[in-house]
Length: 328
Image (tube, rainbow, N blue to C red; front, side, top):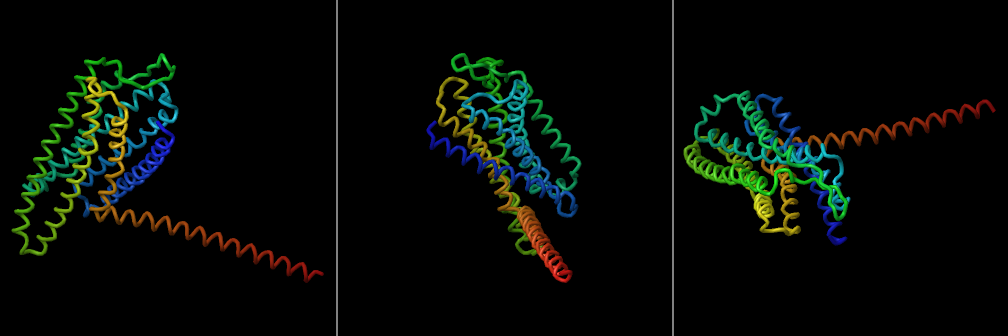
């Protein structure tokens, strides 16, 4: 890689990492604040907290890949870190896709059968998300066996690779994953969101005469649009990666440029989601405002205290000088 491309990569990584770290932390704070306020709890906030947790964990785990890139492909850490990092990154993807399926189901149920959706309590929704995380972790447990440190005979560098499964094992495992955890969810969520928007348009006609109904419909439209955009961004960013990974494991494509670009896209997706939340969600904008106001007030108080201490020091010096003059 040329020096200019290396500098570009470092700048891109620093920007995306900062946005993803700050944005997903902000999203978790917003969900926690909404969870404490019982009157403002929405089912989507629980799911968004799950998405933000997966994106935040993915962001932190990317540091190991950055260190490997800096050391020209030499893996930083031992065999345990190699297995754990590869396993957890794949688990983050699985949890994210399963959470999006749960969100689509929740929104479809809320629009088509509002009464049934209200009967389902927050405890049941939490149980569903716990099941999602358990399923995501169990699905990726074979990777704990598959990944290990391999020493390159030509360069002598250590690399974290999936070689234990073999060629056939990798092809079967990732083909099943691409089918069950990408294509099937894509078809279901496309159908679900088309159905949701059709139902919302029907409800909008019946609520147009009622002010409260119109406001409720507007809120539902905002939430639905936000979650639909999150879903579209997810598939747009992960689609190239899933396709190219299949091509690589079947030895159809072995290039590195597009492969690295597809990996960068799934990393960018973790930073884009919080921006979408802030664009569509008023609660997220309020939390962002509170964070900036808190930081501004803290810095202002610090400056005030420093200026006060400096003024007090000057007064003490003046008094001590005056006292010495009187003694003379």
